[in-house]
Length: 424
Image (cartoon, rainbow, N blue to C red):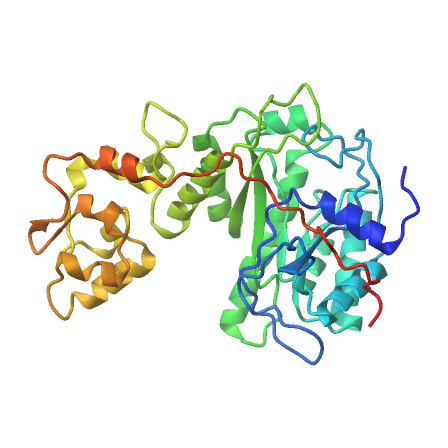
C-alpha cells in the first residue's frame, strides 16, 4: 500500500529503490546545446553521492517502486513488504532542476516499477522528460528506462527526448526469466530494445545525409544482466551480449553481480555478490567491443566460465604459447592488441613510434605498455624481454592484483541535504 509521503521521504525511498540498477553511467551525448539549463555533452557523468551529501553528479531515481510484477530477485517486487511511493512527472522535473541549480547534479537517471500497464508507466516517464526538455529547458544528460511491452510510438518519443535509453534483460535465458520473473515475457523485454535499435540505425543514416537531422538517443542504448542468480555459465552470458551488440545497436551491456536483497527459495544461497565474476565479465566484454576478440576465443573446451585467477586476455595468451613472443617492431596492430599489458592507446603509439625507427624494451613503458605483464610475450629488436625458463602463467598469477570479494555498493543518498530541494 502506497503511503502519503513528503518529497524528502519520496527521495529517500525511491533513490534507495534504484540502487541495484548498474546501467546508469553516462558516456556523453551529442545533443545540441540550446538556451536553457545544462549540457549533455560532458562524458563520464558519475552516479553516486558521498556520505556527507555532496553529489557525484547523476540523480538516480525510480519514478515509482510500486510494481505489478513479482520477480524473485527484485527488492521492489509486488509481494515484498516495504514502503511504497511514487513521484509525479512535475515533482521529478522540479527536483531535477532544483538539484541542478544547486550544483548537486549534471543529469538524471530515471527508471520505474511497472505500477500500471506498460504504456501508462512509459507515458509517465516520457511526460517527465518532456517537462524537463520543453518547459524547464533542461539540456543536461538524461538516461531513461524503457518499460518492457511499451508501445513503439512511446519508445520513439522517449528517444527524441532522452540522451540514452535502456531496457534491462536481467536474465540470460527464457527459462531463467520464466522461473524467476514469471510475469514477464522475454519478447516484451526485447521488443522496445529492437525498436530503439532500428530507430538508432535510421537516425545515424539521416545524420550522414544531413547534420540537421533530428537526434534519437544520441548516447545510444544499454542493458543490464544479473550475474549469479541463475546457473548460466559465462560463455552463455557473453554469447548473448555479443549478439546484442551485433543485432540491437547496443552501446553497452552492464553486468550486475546478484545481491541477495530478498528471500526466495528460487534464488541461490550466496554469502555475498559474485563481484570477481562480474569483474571478469566486464573485462571480457571490453575485449569483445574494442580488442577484436570473439566469445569462442575466450573459453577453452574444458570450462564454460572465465578463469577467475587471470584476466581474460592473459588467460587467452597463456593458452596460446604458439603465438608468442611477438616482435614489437613487426607485429600488426590487431596482434599487438592481443598482448597482455598492451591496450588500444599503447598499441596505436607503438605503430606510430616505430615508423621513426626500431623500438627497444626501454622504449615501451614510455608508450604506455605495462611491462610486468607484456614482457613475457614480446621481443624487441630480436631480444626477448621476459626471463628464459620462467613460465608466463606462473609469473602472471603471482603478480595478479587482488580483486575484493567483499566490496559493497555505496548508499546513493546518504546524507542528502535537509533543505527542501524545491527552494532556491
